[in-house]
Amino acid sequence: MKMNNPIRYKSPEFFFQNRDCPYFPCHTSETAEFNCKFCYCPLFFMKNCGGSYTLLDGKKNCCGCDFPHRPENLQLIIEKLAGMMKQLGAGYEI
Image (cartoon, rainbow, N blue to C red; front, side, top):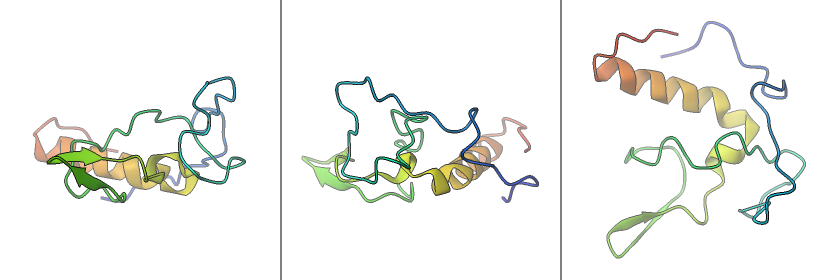
């Protein structure tokens, strides 16, 4: 599912940094582009989330993943969520 209007990921409604957070940056990543919009990954529940995770005692471990914090992935995250909602019959369209 592709969005009709590409996201301008540096606009305030889509980009946020909390430099006062004691965990910032919570992953090893380029801090100038580090996006805190999804402090917790909204794709955590998906097996094919697009990020790089490992399994630790059978549980998803995302400590080495910065996928939701890279601004260029914001549109992909929204598309994945919209696709999942459509599969669930939520009737949501972008």
